[in-house]
Image (cartoon, rainbow, N blue to C red):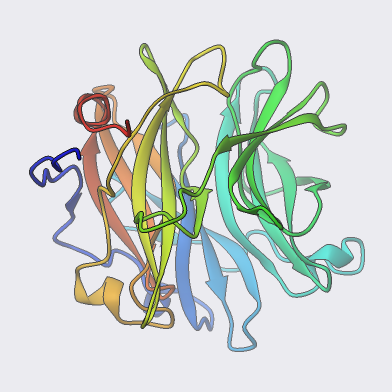
Length: 317
């Protein structure tokens, strides 16, 4: 039996956490959480936050900061609202976005969960300015969520990471498309491990993967059902650059989990749920933005080099 490695802190919580709450919103909101993140051309950090109202329905709203830590300027009105007349799959809200800038398109691709009568589905929207959006509609049918588009084509195709739910379980999949409309070549990418693992019950993508010289670095959330409910924690895996469906290494333990009071208590306790990150100009420092207990937004700081080193030393097998 492999002896577990000593605990290594890979993400440091920012002392100003939580960095955004419903109290920061210029209009009524119940909770704000699970933000996508990107760096704009002028260096501004933009978070596209999930905002839940008192009905339980969610929409998306942008917050901008010069340093990605404080001084957030929140849009005065919702940035992207559900459109249930034209898109009935959004009847009960839109949730948990991920942002990717696609050079080929010259646009930001926002993958999000559309929640309607048939359950959660993956939808896609394109934008250049986070003011106006071109909706592509549903690209993955229910039940499916936790999706992000890769920033470039893989083997000539656009690539979408997502998490369908089927009889076999809740695993991370990869699908390919020539045009962002027609999707196929569906294949499993990372499976929930079953048994007594920390990610035994289901797994899902967290922020969009980071392309490095050594491969695509993926942060993902894993869920383990316990006697007192579900535990959401963060893991890491590394995939080949041109064969994204080939996993080089998968961490054998979780690297970030709910510990702080704002992560353990809230609408859904014991949850850290990152949907976005930005890489600082130094090319190594990661700002990881996450939902804390489905109630607020928090920030943790990490290092690409440290994550790569850790997953190669502490992988499964």
